[in-house]
Image (tube, rainbow, N blue to C red):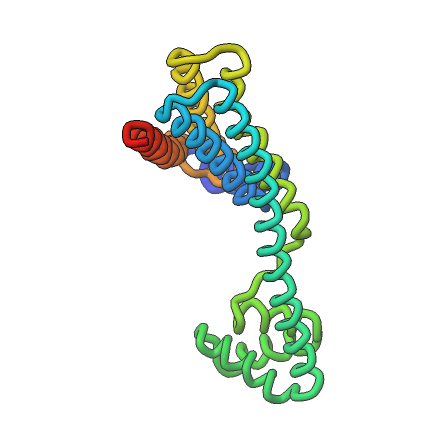
Length: 244
């Protein structure tokens, strides 16, 4: 960054990145990456395993599409149930903190004091912070949740997380199967492999729009994982075909 721009430029750049991440659904980046990554890897693994086992194009398509939609539902519902379970847990902990603030305020006030005392505040400064926080019960509970229990409350609903994962899984998972709708044999497998590799790399590289991670590193990370899974699946298919 040119030195003459200074801190105002850097601050504006950071704000722009944060706004872009929020606009593109930063809160769902984990769901999108999880769904897309798993969709490509598992679907192409089926394709690779079936090709290694010398199965027909029709069988590859049947196995591929059956796996695509079954796994999309499984991934989506699993993510939904996981997020909902966490939300239920966080809600239960918040209810407990609210009860304690209402029924044992002095104990909870001392806990606030201990938290900020450990952060280096003392004397009048500490008293001011403690008094300011404990005057508002909602803010008081918020501080206890985040700083005592380390629990963050997600503003997004669990079903949105589940749907994001399922949709990303289906869209990305279709890529390795599309070539088999128009061709067959070794050439088709090669096209499918190239398409899957491009999609894997693109999925990883696009994370930079939200996370700020280096696009090349992000793309190669997911490409490496997917390639390893595909090679294993192809090898297993060849092995089983040779001994069956």
